[in-house]
Image (cartoon, rainbow, N blue to C red):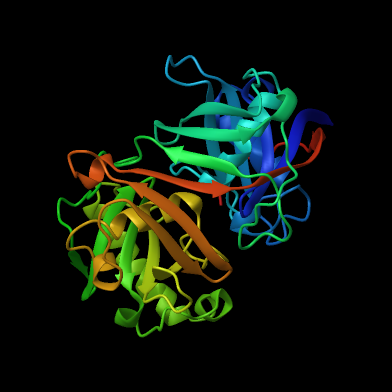
Length: 358
């Protein structure tokens, strides 16, 4: 069997293999078919591959030195579906993003400084730029540290991510419908595209408290069907077309915070509730709190420089917002701190390739 060099990494609350682009086929269809095979896609446990059997652990990152003058490395994110043999490269993934800086340094794509190295990453999915600050004392990546993030046991070295031009990442506009509120299926929503296209709505509008566990929400078929109807309508209104086979936009339930935070959220991927929240989703949710008239402002209005604490099923995540001089929410800069860990490096064996499809 063929083998491909691979590094398995945890990035934030996600996990997946990271590859150098030159180790994979250049043709996207051949690349995707190879990734489906090595991850074991098409089985609920991904039992015959290295995927983890859930959306959070069925992710792939592809990294290369960037030809762009404003970036050090390029990063392509690939969401590999668990039970369906298909991939989606429409969105970015901010959790896996925090593994890219350490990987790039350790593979010689970026020269390490000391005590910290800043890696400018261009995300190819959205053509956006992110600064990743990686601890590199003595010119070596440091993974051990005292920083903890909810949803991950133990502690590790901090990695600060600053999103530089995240507004309109996929649609070209912070508010893709041109309105701060829309009405879909009788429910008021805010459609926003800040690092991740999302459709935000009050949990109570769908008969939920917003504090349910992911398992409770995932078990409510009627609720999920209505949420999907809203998501499909939002996708069309946002200019994304028919999103039935896409993982964007992500629907998010909002509720008042209960544990000293700013806002409580239940984030969907898009058909299962995230056990915490995506880093890119956190950027957009924090920004929504600063957008006048948004449904998020109904619950948690903020203005000016702020630290937004989002409560999720696994705990909390903090996002720092730095307003632009002109006060335009589209020019906000948002940053957050995550952690990453290199889990193993070696070669992954590729079985005989199958045709992609359902």
